[in-house]
Amino acid sequence: MNYLTLKKYRLKINHRQLIDILQKAYSAEKAASFAYQGHAGSVKDKNEKLAIRQIEMDEWNHRREVLQLMKRYDIPVSKYYEIRFHIIGKAISFSCYIIGWFMPFYFAGSLESGNVCEYFRMKQFFNELGVREHDEILYEMGMKEKEHEVYFLGKIKNNKLLPFFEKIFSWGGKKSFNNVNFDEKYPVEASDVYCKK
Ligand SMILES: [Fe+2]
Ligand SMILES: [Fe+2]
Image (cartoon, rainbow, N blue to C red; front, top):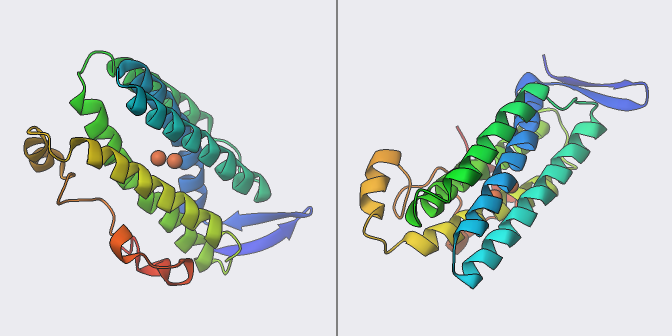
């Protein structure tokens, strides 16, 4: 059963999927930030370095926003996810120095593509509980992940390795893990068309 109760002046949510997705996103944003530190450190091009550093900052911001939401509903940080994503982030960060130029851009784009729907799903879960006050911020975060996906794809879209990777990992110029399209963007009130199961 999903419901909201007021307990000791704090709202408590009873929605297992929503709690899990918030805890996971909070820790995964740290993994992403770590990964981009390695990515920015490993590229030589100055503009790429700057762009990836900005994306790292965006991910730290997302982590702060998610924490605000968790505090609001008294949701604890998951120690398990924190440790797991810490290790994953550091491992990816290190690997950027040894796997060449293409793969860090490719896998960053593919991860961002999946992250878009995390925020739209969160919005749908809150809406299931009748909570609409976070619609705007969750929409903004989902759209920011889409911007990141578009940036990474733009870097590799003409690379000869892309068709091969797209075939194996199902993400690239033709395939995406979300149905957000900047050429036909829906406003926040109509954004339920995004990421429907
Ligand atoms: Fe993010
Ligand atoms: Fe991102």
